[in-house]
Image 1 (tube, rainbow over the protein chains, first blue to last red):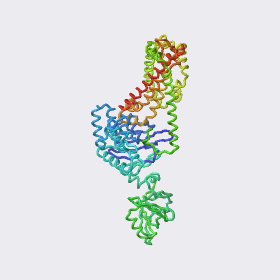
Image 2: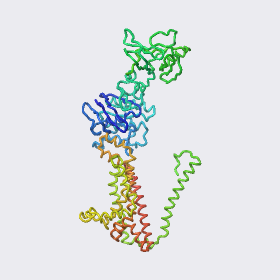
Image 3: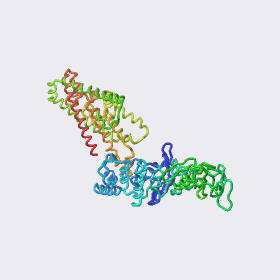
Length: 351
Length: 274
């Protein structure tokens, strides 16, 4: 559908470095990254507001790299919405339709239609200056959608909103995307936001794409330490390969005072992760046998509502996220001796 | 003083606000005292003479139309100049910016002298006057040229500041909504800069309306031809007609007051409708 090939852009000391991303038709794609990683600049390059230094932007195979913004038919909602303060909500929504030569009657009709779809029909005559954050967001979205864009680019669309409004806008975005069969790129630094809307995502770091894939791939098959840390994986370990395991595609890695079985035949030093929610904890029964099983004790824990985050100390210090049921069982055992199990299939070795 | 949204304040804060209010009162009282002194001093017969004088009515009309025309021409330059200086960075940007500000710093007499030298001593100046037939020297057109030279910079500076204050993101969004750069300027930037443009217009008009020094040098003060109110005051007081000079001065103050109030009210309505 729309893809960039080795897109490069420089401004001051910052550089978008050969960014290649492909968005599929009707896909909700989230571009993740920490502040200052170049997400907004990339969006501005896509909609033609910044002239790229090299590389191409292809839309259904056609090169649009040097097309004017108005000829790309790409909808753009900037971070602070940039609603025109001298116009009413209706005039804001109808702005683009009027600019391309539609009659005021038709523009007003379609603006009203789009406003109704997004639940802001009652605000049409209001000035945009007195709107709440959520209302501004919907108005900016309506202004972009009324032009029937081929692709919609949303720059941090909910970052300025409170938690409840954020969730309702995310649900609305996903519903609108499905109903209108839109291709959407949504820029964010917030992982929860990505989980609530994304089909696929990419992680941008300092102007470079670190990894693209489904959120599950980004969570469990991180390419490198940056992606792992960005995806909030706290269990990142480095160790030396001790030996290859006979009759299986695995090896043992010496880390702290224990050997852990890690998938794949490898040599030298390896870095691997295991997601906190994939760590199993059980009450130690005196039997310390079993693959990747070792004694631990709880040093700290904190209830996050949906799960309990437990910090474990032992042969290997690590973090586990467990359900309330498991946590209650552990606490009911009234013993400091627990065993942590790191299932080999849940261990992922970083590149 | 409106205090609806003011936070709770301590004695130091009240002292600070009181100080600001005191300075405001002193300044307004200073201006009003001077005007009241003029009103008390002015002779009724002199006022009647001024109103009845054909030459002074001509000077008043000359002052009004030249200053309005100057304001219009200045804004015609100020809007594109202010926009390009605000939106683009180019080689020698700082130098060009400084050149535009130069007439603000010029002593007004220097402006008149410069124009006189240009049109009387340089080949280009003579060509414009003699071959092209555009006569400025000692002509009403020269009044507009003098006023434009001295006052246009105020308009450009004010309009540039207005464009500086408008987030470029508004124009960018307009570009993605089907606008050309010109359309985004007309539909977004220009309406948003309207306050700054009106303010620039007021400053320019005020400067042009009261201009005196350069006019005496470049166009002189010929009764019924190049005389404007400011030069009338000078001429009347130089021949000892202080009462008439004062009456003309009061007339200028009244016209200026009426003009500023009208522009503010009409300007405010235009803003509300945009």
